[in-house]
Length: 123
Ligand SMILES: [Zn+2]
Ligand SMILES: [Zn+2]
Image (cartoon, rainbow, N blue to C red):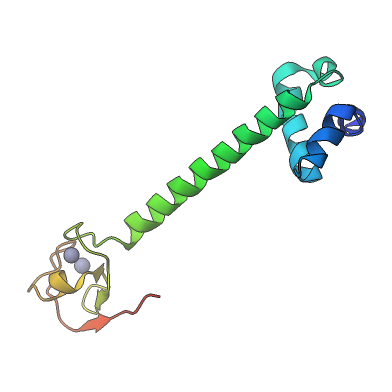
C-alpha cells in the first residue's frame, strides 16, 4: 500500500489528476498496474501509461454495461415468441408474455392453458 501512496504523489499522477481524473479511479488504475507490472515499475510509471490504463478501465466498464443492458433486454423479451417484449401475465401459469402470445390458447413456455391475463405495465 505504501507503494500506491508514493505513486499517488508522483508527478505523473499529479498530471493525470490535472487532466480531470478522479483520485480513487487513478488509485484503482495503479493497483491494476502493480498486479500487472510489479511494484518496482510503479515508481517510474509514466502519465501516458496511467491514462492508458484508465481508458482501458473505462472501456471495460462500458463493455460490462453493454452486457448488462443486453441481459436485461433479454429478460424483458417474451420467452414464447422472442419477438416482442413481455407485457402480460397469464395467471394460470404465472408466465410473462407479450400481448400477441397472450391471445393464444396455450402458454408458449409451459403449454398451460391461458386463462386470465393481466396486462403488466412497465415504465
Ligand atoms: Zn410473445
Ligand atoms: Zn406458462
